[in-house]
Image: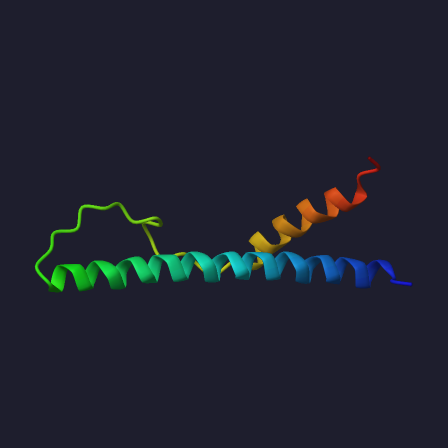
Length: 80
């Protein structure tokens, strides 16, 4: 049986994991696009394609993790 503190910590870890996974995916996409763009430009090609992510993503903050954890907790508490 899990006590409330363990449950909250588990939800926090899940939220953190989700946000870090999203960060890693977004960062990879951003990085791959810029590698490709530099390669194209080094070959003399003009790149006019809009990047999938304009700015490099920021690592999730504690506050963002708390917001995500609240979403998960609210879902878990639903009685439907």
